[in-house]
Length: 410
Image (tube, rainbow, N blue to C red; front, side):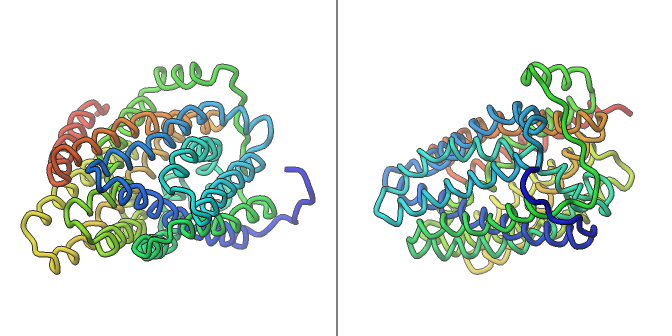
């Protein structure tokens, strides 16, 4: 880092500041993403293609992030990981602020969001692979990478849940621009903390990579555990992850006209499930490896999708909303628990200097597979129904996890 450095902080002080700032940033992301996807869903509703329209917006951002991720380790080595994190988060904040101001000024929300999506993806890609390692450095006392990632998820859950409810209110009121502005503002504390406060734990800068894509491919092909984690991350991104991003079109299809009640409550419940991620990780890895635990929790999340479809078919609205809270908590805890253990598998499978490259490999897998999953989900929601999509993808997820688990070494 350049510039005037703050004195080194105690682990508890640095870790607490980082945790609080992360919770605020996650809350802002929850507001921004719910409002953004909601604005597109509502605009596309008259044409009957809200699922595909929302999926396309998300796919644009994810593809741009996937293209950027392989080059992130080299950029971090050249400029410093913390500097790159600050620049990436600052760029994202400026983009969200600019988009919000344009919408408040009268620009069409869908056009603004579609133009911003790939730029946001690039900003995400520059910081994504560094975030787990920075988190481990700031929360050095947490232990393993899986435990560290689970802990930060638990503490940021309250910010995410609050943000989801706030996003639902803004969405229901039609004030889309303020949701984007709020996302930008809530990112600022995290930028300041990483720039000004040194982590108490050690942090090894990544090795440079002149052939980013080839190096990732070689690392995945030569490491069995990383290869299986790569496959699992891809499956989860196609089957389980899209419903968390397509909450608005899914709930709008299940119960038309209840955007605030359905999407806001279900999204908040998903984030509240992050409180249980440390418990899910501990239980799943008690007598299993991180990789096996990640596969099993991914299968559990797929089973919850089936349960969500059944509630829409069987229950009435009042009882159904209560059930959705429980389902959202279960789905969030299992999905984010699976992610924590996948990251843990990746970092444990390689030596310290290659950890950021292993995380890049997992991120590339998820972000290249996610657009495929999003578009398939969007087509299924628009062409058939959200209920059919939940049942079909849930069944595929359970079966795929069983096949993948059978390939684990005994």
